[in-house]
Amino acid sequence: MASVKNPTTFSGRVIDDPKIAKFLFSDIRMSWVWLIVRIWLGYEWIETALHKITSPAWVQTGEELKSYWITAVKVDAVTGKGDIAYGWYRDFLNVLLDAQAYTWFGKLVAYGELLVGIGLVFGAFAGIAAFFGALLNFNFLLAGTSGTNSLLLLAALLIVLAWKIAGFIGADYFLLRFVGVPWEEQGKRGEEARKNAGEVKSSKVSVGREQRTEVRI
Image (cartoon, rainbow, N blue to C red):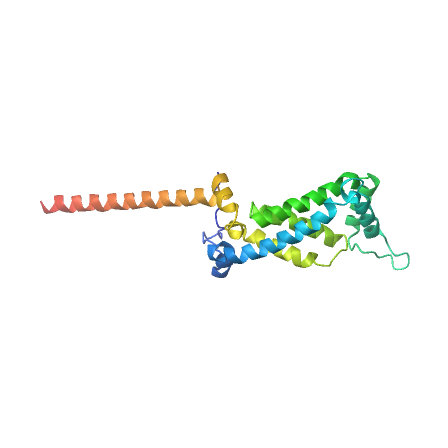
């Protein structure tokens, strides 16, 4: 497995993370804080998903999503503006509407939200779950829906940054150990390098002592 290395400058100086960043996003003492954040965020996603999953207009016909897209792509005849600020995203939704993608996209959104929520609540690959949650929030914002999406997006991005410890009090405690993580390999290589360096230094010291002994004789 490839090792993760800190970036370096052209002069070879290692660019390390600030201490505050290490404490917030890598120190297991902060895992209690991320436990609260991810359970709250996961609950929000599960609650939203259950409303969609129990609605035939979302998981069967997709009519609810169709209505949402139609409302989002509307443009005011006078101002020429709509809920969507970016024309390319409006064109993207129009393509999906023309292809009737809402018939299957509704299921994808509903069950995707549920999976994101479960992953966050149980701390199972919390960083990955938060990433896909953030992706959903980002698309809702692009479609002109603000509401709580901005706050949910912020929370998800923070969990992504803290992915190493966000699920430490949860399933990730076992999953990340089972799957393996890059920094373990880096740590092993670093330990071996230090050990080898120590052996070389010790060997040089021994040779030096032997040479001094021979000179004295």
